[in-house]
View: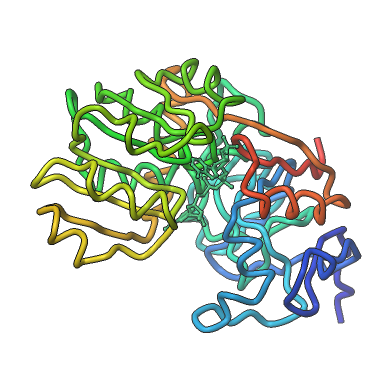
Length: 317
Ligand SMILES: NC(=O)c1ccc[n+]([C@@H]2O[C@H](COP(=O)([O-])OP(=O)(O)OC[C@H]3O[C@@H](n4cnc5c(N)ncnc54)[C@H](OP(=O)(O)O)[C@@H]3O)[C@@H](O)[C@H]2O)c1
């Protein structure tokens, strides 16, 4: 019988507070057909990771414990499984791991070929690890759901977060007029990403600062921010949220469409992201960096909702 190879990983053996994240040894995943073994250089943290860790997603996401969390990754192909045609050992790749098969908080992950693409050539693997989920999410919301085009007025809430910072750049890349909400400390960063107007939501009611109705609101904050956004959209316009449930009654009252969505991300979308990055139209926004053994602190920062850009986890160079 073959002895399993070992790696460092962060696993949960139970759901709960950040303490349940355990830095320990785990087996290197064994490849199934169609999978690629990635030696991970960097991972990044998404709010979904801590929601899964806390147990709040159990009604629709069943994990076999112990489980390795983490979705975003960038690294190098170590081995390819049967039926893999696009990659070979040594390729620089980025994409997303699947919690159910083993996530990206580890030295290795077995990733479906369709969930990977070649990493952008012009940036480091560290920057590449910041891109997959948030950029794919922002593209789904802005382009697939809201159909944002040149000349539209677009309000993006939570604009300094992972999804928001990508959404600002993507909306600008197609020629939209972008209004962004953030706290005072991140206003300059939003201007440098191209936002035409930046509103400091900590000063008072942000909705009073939006002087003319917008064609599209992309809300990434939820709660009060979401409920105050309906009245900011022109009649016939659209509100898309990644952070709450749309309220049909409010949407009707204002004569707008309100939608939630599931991010649509496959290798073609990752290829589009890599192209935009290499063309200089999109850049990763990185906040704090942690070691794999410091994942508890990384989750605490993510849960504080004060992370600026992406939280990066260094795993290997
Ligand atoms: N539907 C999907 O498929 C999907 C996919 C990805 C993400 N999501 C969800 O989308 C949401 C955003 O994700 P994310 O990765 O962008 O989160 P994130 O990076 O953790 O967002 C943190 C940012 O939120 C900002 N923020 C907090 N409260 C705010 C407020 N009241 N007004 C404006 N900005 C505020 C903070 O800015 P300041 O520091 O300036 O306050 C911080 O930069 C999460 O709920 C996530 O679960 C959904």
